[in-house]
Image (cartoon, rainbow, N blue to C red):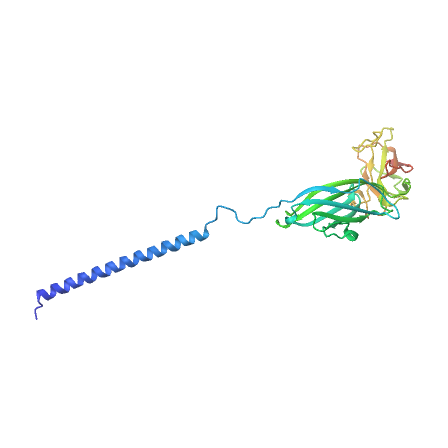
Length: 307
């Protein structure tokens, strides 16, 4: 059967119309999808955008207004406690306040970390009023504490930064202390040293030092050295008269031959060089305490033969 031209043309028209409908539908769908994708992208960018202004960021804004502590303190049986305070403004960012008490030369530590409080506990911490921004602490300077100058170092830890960035030293106070007793001179004894040594040979010598006011009252144990030709060795350290001396050690430093720190036995390790003079070298040993003015021990002299 021969198809009708009219019927065939109608099918073609219907086919073209169907293609047009499908093409229009696909384009419309793609456009809608594109719009959705763009909206999602804009929403994502809007959510991930960093705001121009910084919102609710805390800063450390405390400031120290003043420090209270005695300039001079003398021990007595009825009074051996020192109260110290630090006044702080804007304490909202303050987490911890503490202080450290040492001798001025750093050889003696009384308190390595003493907490300070603004709690109004007068009997325990020496603090008079709670919440007034004045942080206080108490510590004892006993009669066995050596005479001399001491320092109080003050520290604040904030509650904003992480350790160690939250810690800041905010002040130092220096005071003089007297144990309320007569300052007596130190005593040296028990010198142990070879009778003779060879050039280029290492040797160690020691001396015992003590003080009636306590071992911690000893400031220095040292010796002066005189060559066989009677000239004085002049190292960098010099006494008040401009005479050079060598410090001995009681700090456990094995480089100087010291075995145990703080036992009162002061040590020194030495070697005479190949070009050193031979003959009798004179050693003069002495100790000095921390008193004001300082007291000196007797001098112990020893002659060592260098071969």
